[in-house]
Length: 391
Image (cartoon, rainbow, N blue to C red; front, side):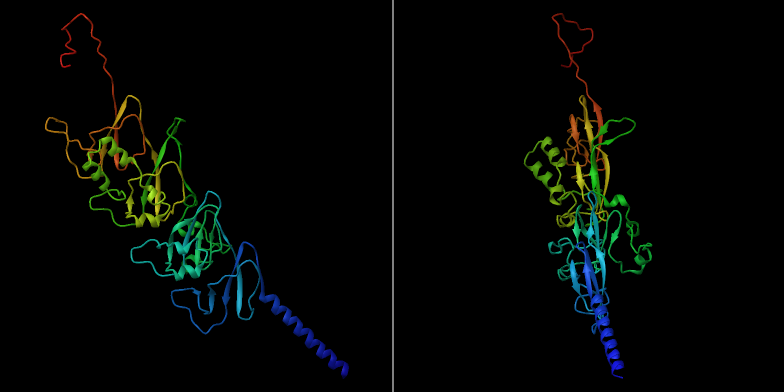
């Protein structure tokens, strides 16, 4: 009887040790150096708000705080932990961020306002407390980014995969066999998630390289001014000031060809573009040589050849944008009207030999050959041809 009692006690102790060991093993979680642990609380007295899938105040469900690298303890009976990789953006690619938590977008908005407090979207609580909005975020993650984003708070689309856990049933239905989304699930092609490169391109059958510019169309902003087909930051107020200051046509052309893209880092800082008064639609200022991290939901780029005027040519410019037409040709000119550069119409000053980053959607260039007639006078005088009658 004594032996049986000892065996029963030993069995209880052994069972208790085994249960304790299982409990400890289930409650310890090893998070790798490039992983985050998504914590789900099994029970809670509070309920989540209807418009948030993430708990910020101890409610049951996905928790806002992530487990970072190391050996972490979360009591198995109350919490479960799933591991997700950090968002990694490869060289030459971009990462498009879509928030699944935050305030709703205003009516008509296509993307969320960005604030410096959001940084690279690595802290979900800071994002929400600073007024972050749901939907497409205006900045993109640049090449080489490595960010521990919240897998429920954010989806991040890169060229080869989409990081994060979708909340909407529509996106969940598009998940593949590996329970992962693809960029196509978000309406993106792989090339949309690469840097936009403006560089020389082969043109036509000739193998010679042709200089290019990028014509930009933006998909968000205030409407275009009435009657306008393209927008220029600040309009043409600077051209009006130059005219009042008796600037030459050459100085005005230089101002028109000069870009205001430095105000928004070549459309890469889309929040700065909107803050500077950017409008939706075709943009006056093109992109020149370089590689650009542009949000494909907000900016589109079409590459076209740069205007080249060869020696012995001039380019007569017909402007479809600018200030109102004001004829400067005078009564003696019988072939239509001419305007100063910066006004709509045919410029009175053509472009000389050179290369020009001119937007062909805003300006049409007609290449006109020029010739030089040399008259050599001799001592002998002849009135047979009258070539110098009007000289």
